[in-house]
Length: 100
Image (cartoon, rainbow, N blue to C red; front, side):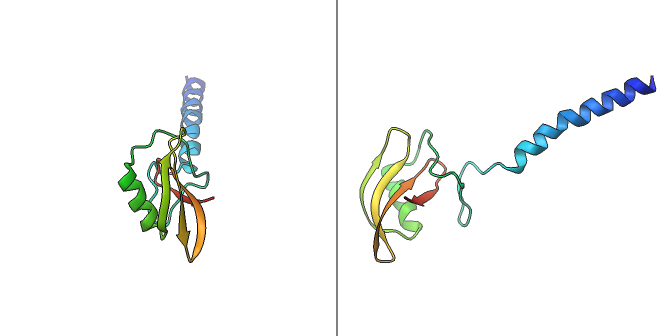
């Protein structure tokens, strides 16, 4: 009986380990200030409207946003200016704004 209890306890312990490993490296579904997905821009269904995308890009410090369009991967792409320099940028469905 003791062997069965120890075996069940070991299996339960192993079953819980993948859940811990999976949550350790996850990034949030929505980017927040100061936090960005390192694999951005992330393809996916994008629910930002053009106006929301433009505002999010401007809030990230970009000005003179031009040619804003949503591509087939669900990533908003545009050209803009930051610190006086022209930049190509992308905004993904998580809200990550990335200079390319």
